[in-house]
Length: 401
Ligand code: C5P
Image (cartoon, rainbow, N blue to C red):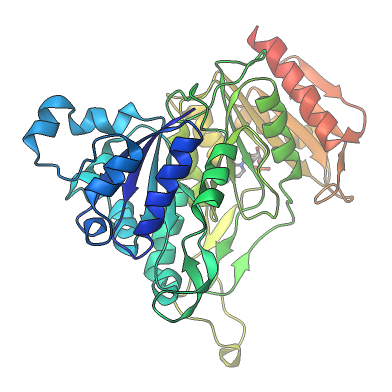
């Protein structure tokens, strides 16, 4: 059973927060509500307190609360922080790091997982400002529960409705963060990697050319997801940082969705320290200065100016926070082992997992790899990506002993 700090924002959906409290209490969770000034226009502190069987916090300046429970302590006493409903205003303040009331101060001060359930008018939800803020929050590791689509209180139709409270609860309880074993930001499991933090990057990155076009690659994310799943099954706390892919999250991992190489680099830096980093992502080597407006076909083919993206693996290789075991991948079409061996030294990685991608490895279910370590080269037999993942995790367990 988990302890929720529930921040109730000011929107018509705030009444559903009351239902959510009831459902959470019934399921045995503790709920401490925090009501914003806007939220208090829709529900009263009294009704939330009665349902939560807990005091409701409303003001940063309430000295009595501050004497009994300081705002820093309040932000950390729970296992997770849920913002429901998260208004466009609250989301914008979170993205900007503004702390001008109790709710936003708690959100800035917390060291616990934060989950937000946005609810607002469809235009407000689809507005570029809100979508950019949401992308920023996701890149920082905040979990966003996508709003439902349907008729809205304001009479319009579209995405922006708060999902039903039971669905929100089910979503949260399926996250790997909820068990009371929550330690810091991530879950803890049993197994040979218990107590270890493993960071995995996966998938491609997308580098925008303009608002509709991107530079991408064929990485499906399957191998990285299989590795994250195998690490979680071995009991590790896993952070999976992933570019645009169409894969469901493996159970037991904290997933951070990003789009570009720069966002991936930032998410990796924010997720340190880690005992092991396995960088499987096919990061775009170059990006272009994206045009803020759609490039017109009539203007002829654009002359794209490429600039180099940060090399996440090489940066980690030189970082004071370098994980004890740093593992890169090398997708090559020729001189696979020679190129990968050179990469191991150039990027200061411990191991490189090299594969020949001239066939249908990218997007496929099978892989044939070579493991390059300081001791030499091992040729592993062709296997499913799941088996390659399990074998790699078994090697990591050996190495960390
Ligand atoms: O140099 P190359 O792209 O072949 O290196 C592949 C390895 O480096 C992979 O582990 C990949 O995840 C990582 N990489 C990275 N950042 C980049 C490019 C590659 O982390 N910008």
